Image (tube, rainbow, N blue to C red; front, side):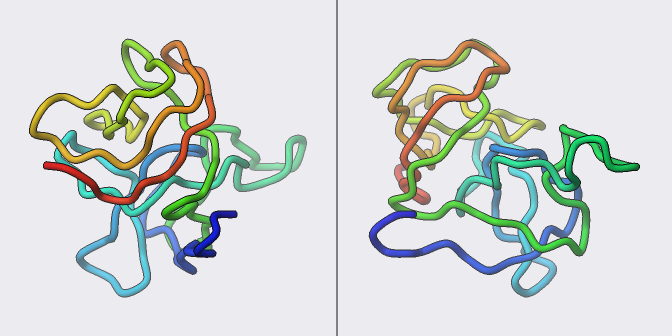
Length: 137
């Protein structure tokens, strides 16, 4: 955890994948949604693990939480994993949300970012990042 212990205590208000950017849900208190636009104002990054343990009926390694489930969100200062979007990313890159997936992509000028890459990752791979919270625009 980060030195601020800033992990929000929240629930998912839709299906959220592991290790992707999440945003505050403007329609419900204490809820988050998977980021879905390159202009998303990032709250943090979803938990690394899947919703149910492997081998359990209904387990799905692409789901960290469904609507109503509690979800761990890594917040400002936390070091965690982030799935790389199209094109991947390189250590030192400022990362923003990829449209529709919430995965991390290298920031383009004028867009908000939510993490800094500590490691490089090819598209679809997970790598270590530090969560910055919503920065730039």
